Image (cartoon, rainbow, N blue to C red; front, side, top):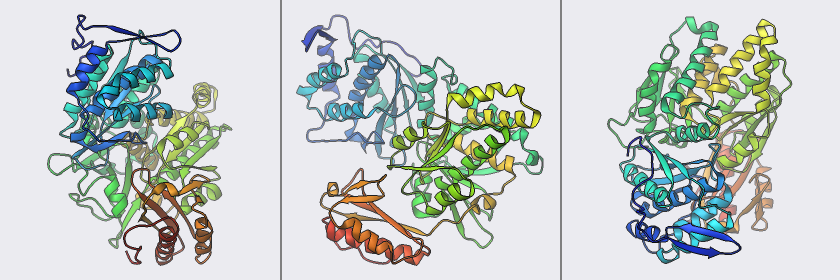
Length: 570
C-alpha cells in the first residue's frame, strides 16, 4: 500500500448488510458478515488478556495480530465519533526487539481519551463470538454515527514484526469502510505531529515528513544564526539512536539543519539489536554510556529510545567520571531559558513546570527558589503531565526518563504576532520565542525536536555541557522494586507521594525519613507488574541506599511481600 490511501476492496458490496436496531433509535449499520470473516483471519489466542495502559498495548509480537486488527476497528469508530483523523502507531518503544505494541492517537495529537482506553481493553479481550456485541456496545455508548466517514493514519517502527502488524490495523480500518493513509516508517512523535497537522487544517504544519523536517530545521537554523557564539566553534553532537527508527529519520533530516549542527550517529541499526545495551532507557537505568560509542572527555552526547520519544544527555568529565543529564535537567534548562525570554520581552505570561514524584528534589528547589518558576507535581504517566501543562500560557513537562515537551497557549502566539511594534531588543527576543515554539513538537515528547531545542539553547546561552550540568547537583537517590502478591493493596494520594493503604505504611515511611538529612521517600504500585516501586533520596548515596532498603522492608512486611526479603547492598 505504501503511501496510498483509499477504500480497500475487502468488503465487497455483495457482503450481506445486517441492520441491527439498538437501544433508542440508534440504527447501526455495520457489515457484520465482513467483520466476522476478517476477525477469523486475525483470531485471538484463547486465554490471552491484555490491558491498554499509558503505552497502549505491549507484549510479544506473535500475540498481537488480533489486537492490531481490532485497534483498526476501534480507530475507525473513534474517527467517526470525533469526525477527525485518528492515528495508530505500531511500536513497543524501549522494549526488546521481539516485543511489539500499538497505541492510538487522538485528534490533537494527544493520547487516547480514558473512556476509550477501556473500550480498547474490552475489544482486545473479547472472544470471537462476542466481537459484534462489543462493537455495537461501544457504538451505542459513544453515540457513534456509523454513516460518518472515518480516516485513520498509520505509522510503524523498525521492528521485524511491525510491517505485517500495521497491515492488520489497516484491515480493521477498511472493514468498517474507513479510509487510511499509511505513512510507513515514522518515529512515534512524528505520527502525533501528522495527526495534529491534519486536524488543524495545516495550521500547525504540513502533514508530511518533508513538512516536519522543514518546520523544525528552519526554526533551528534561525535560532543558531541568532547565537553570538556560533562563530567560535562548529557544533557537533554524538547521538546514540538505540538501533531504532530515530537513526533513519535523523539521517533523512540532518542535511536540513547541517549548517547549525553536525550529528554523528551511533547504534544506527546497521548492526546490533534494537534497544540492546543502548538507548535512553539503558543509559538512564544503568547510569552508564551505551555500547558501541567512543566518548572522549567533555564531548556532548545524547541517546534516543527505540521510537525516539525520549532523550537523555551525558558526558565524561576530565577525571573519567560519567555524568547523566536527565529529563529534570532538560526541563530546567528549557524553562529557565523561556522565563528569561519572557522577562526580556516584558510579557506577564505565566509559565509552569510539571514534574512527577520521581523528579530530583534539587531540580524542584532550583526551579522554585533560584529561577522563581512555579513547579507542579502530577501522577506518573505522560497524559497526566500533558494535561496539567495545558493550564499555563507556557507549560514545560518532562519525566526524569527524558520524555517531555513544552506547550504554548494561543495567548502566547497572539502576543508574539504583535511583537512588530516592540523596540529592537524586545523584538529580537520575541523572534527567538517564535522560533522556539516552532521547534517544539507540542503534540508529544519528541527526541529529535528536544535535541534541537537543547542544542539551540546551549548555543544561544554560550553554555558548555558541563556548565549546564552544574546548574544544580542532584541529590543521591535509589530506586528499588519489591515483589508483592497483589500490587492493588497499595493506594496513594498527593500525586503518588503518600501511601493511603495499607494502614501503617505511610507512618513507617515518615519515621524512616526522619533518620536522614535532606531525605524523602515514596512508594507506588507498578502500572504493569505485581511489584511496588520504592524511591528514596538523601544527602549521601549511602543514606539514600539505606533509606530505600528500610522502606522496602516496610513494604515487604506491611503490603504482602512474596519471595525473598529485600537485602541490603546494590
